[in-house]
Length: 578
Image: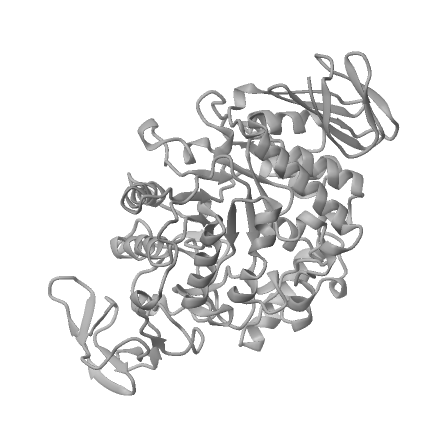
């Protein structure tokens, strides 16, 4: 077996495989690469690299880290897994609904196999894509996953590489596509040995996590290949249907063909080769529609991008919060713009940023399905001081209204696990770093950050406390009892209506209109022959419509037609056909 590693910074590299050390030799054809032939190495063999006589380090491209990110790597043969999804031809993102989940807290066991037991619940709910938060190996047993350091390996406590494959195979058997959240903008603080091997990072740019990944400096050809090969591996070796790419605004890259565009081109090639759609979703705070503009039109060509402005508009309107980045949101005018024009900040002044921000979306050329929108996400819940969900703040009436506006929008809706039944469990920030000093620094830094927002340090959970992790696990007994089961039925009803009515899956932004009365606090979303009618007022009132109501399809409270309009109870929503 041939074992190789890119380590241009090393003067010598020794391979240790199954306890036997041997010198590696420089590959004359590829600068910076070291190779060794190990006839006895095979699936299950443990190995590592000694750079210039140092301590053994795991393989930067390790497929398997059974001893954790500080231990040796293990050879993994992808061909040994028996797939049963040969009949799977994928499903496009357009027209679908995404469900974001975290393997470690989705179930009490926190494993892929345990998560498989609830895939039928997601099918019954009516979602089409499951977006799994990062599973690349990180230090410790539990964490959010954004501190991954072995980006090719699957976190062993979740079930390792075979566990992920079983999960994907089971999802495909149920008609569910699987997306994976990947992090290419930084690595975690513990177990990150890449800089010892080569110029994976650069101080030319700074990110919130330190030096940026080197995408355009000397040696960056191999770094980009490292990222692109990783993406291919998830899509080909693990049969994943797409990737959600974390914080793309921190991928600093001045090349003529940026990494994201190159990745989109590779995805198109793979889709043709595999015979199924490949979805790429960018998390970006730039409010730049060029991210999803086709490459032929001068864009990057990704399938979709997260749109936080819709979240902010919904959240601020319904909760009344105006702190931080919510300061420019909360009016019905802002909500109407978010529901029709994608970005609220599309070249307008962002008070929070202290500058103008964003770029307008061409509503006739770019479909709404290219924007993933949400009421709750891991970020928007977990980065609150106590990880409180909307259910801890909003009334059931407001939860019903927010779900209706999300699931009847022209965008691609995304739900965060447990949202569909108004989970009573929080989702907090948790870690399990092996270094106690690092754990203390994370705890103190987080508490200091929230102290600036008038939170007492004692009220901010300690991320390193195992109780913080256990509190964040879903309680699967909740969906069977009130009030959770009623909220779950509401979500199921809305998702079924979205499936049954093509107007609600129509992604053409130019065909969406919103009317509203800021003072009376009512709003109407026009979707073809359907009207989503919302009364946010404290009293029952008549909401004028443009045509008589033929029938009421869905209503959260007492609702009935009156001449050319609809009377709704206070804090009610109805979907009607005109």
